[in-house]
Image (cartoon, rainbow, N blue to C red; front, side, top):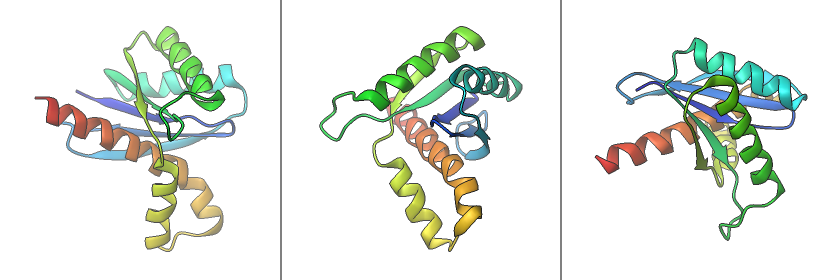
Length: 139
């Protein structure tokens, strides 16, 4: 199944997609868009263009598992994606993915503008990889 991963942000939203066998998640781009509705529309279009069968949206829960304002905004974004794309949308716990993405970019010595351009796509890949791993372990 082709899955489309999303790391939603107020300014930049990272995208990732996996192959049909769900073995490899790859960055699919970063959308720079501040308008919530426009971001949802373009993300839904990108998921459909990638022939995704499910969209996985990062759900930034607090460390204690509660949902704060950011998580609630991601929940609203997931609902809008579901409405616009007609695809199933899964909210997936993304605690610490952006931190992990920055650590990965430190290892690869990616700095400055280049780092800013890719960190959200790397976070989307981490969200998608985590969800794919969960699915593999459920079989």
